[in-house]
Image (cartoon, rainbow, N blue to C red; front, side):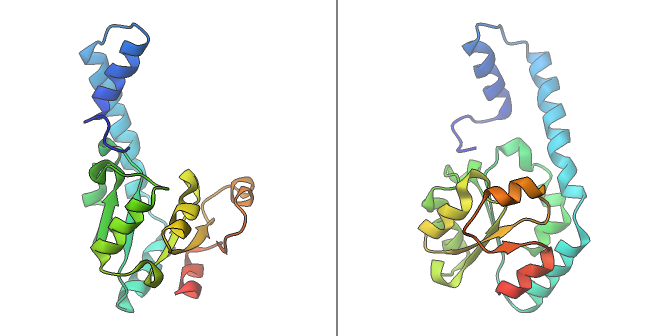
Length: 172
């Protein structure tokens, strides 16, 4: 996710080597293609309410950014995704060599959006301690819970919870 490895196949080779297993390039490519296919699925199954909220937010003239901890193969389908058209800045950890919760990735997002941390809000599911990272970068953070199982959303405390995509409009 932080660019340590140039690609997924290198990660697989490293894992195999660490266990003393010879790398079979055909097998590695098969596993890689399966991962690429699996990671493309979420880009084509967008909750309609999310698209509606993004339309409203963009209609208000607000800038929208995305920060994602990801490896390159996980976002190969991003540019073909309906969501992509709504974002003014997209920061993938593998491209900037920084990952959440490191404050630098939030600073990069603010720079690309041309806003200060105090002018920004961060909305996330709370994985990778991202909400705390946003706060430490000076950004107000909100916990998106509408797609999380209840037990997971209850594990993260001290953040205002957004229980539906439309709740985003309440915090703008």
